[in-house]
Image (cartoon, rainbow, N blue to C red; front, side, top):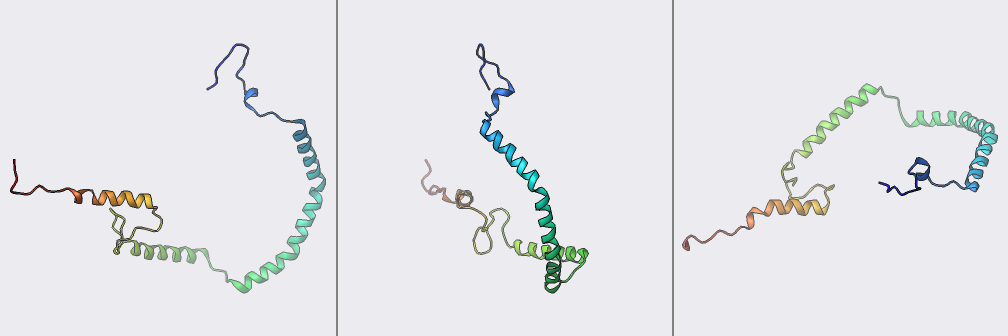
Length: 133
């Protein structure tokens, strides 16, 4: 929030950074250079694509075979189902697995917090039965 003073106008113009003449000139010259070099660049890129396209396609054919998208999607669904079976061994409340380990992605701060929650009730001392006042 800006404070208003006499003689001070809070307008959009005052919020923008100043533009130096040097940066304006540099920007203008870069734009002109782009216009000048654009046809050369375009021709060079098209030439590269013509020569490399055949080589790339031959390499791809040697390395991989084309598989329909439906088969790939079905395989992914089956793999996801098997991954879920592995995570079922982890306790949802404490996030501990059967060996008492936390997940890899959990940072030490979170581990400490969960451990303190888990052990909070265990530390209470029960008074001896014979000493009731």
